[in-house]
Length: 121
Image (cartoon, rainbow, N blue to C red):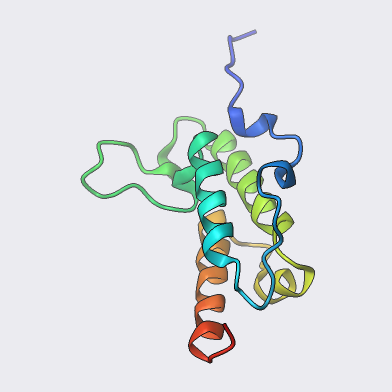
């Protein structure tokens, strides 16, 4: 059997331990939630699943990973983290079964910005 390394993101037992707030429709905690979420993704080496590397970075594009199955697994984990740290109503407004994590991240961000511009925040 090949020597496989365990990715840190696969070892997170409960995302709510690290992101103890629930983002809701009001969006008032978006900045705090987003900061905690990005910090968690950086710590667990999956930030590229919500924020693509800058073109000048010498990293491979995330999808061109040498192990596409692992990349997909990590992407699904990040999506689960997003979905498990927002309210049910907000989840119902943004969920799409065919999303990648970055799609869910951007959809959530855009949705809350629309609410903000509508004067609800």
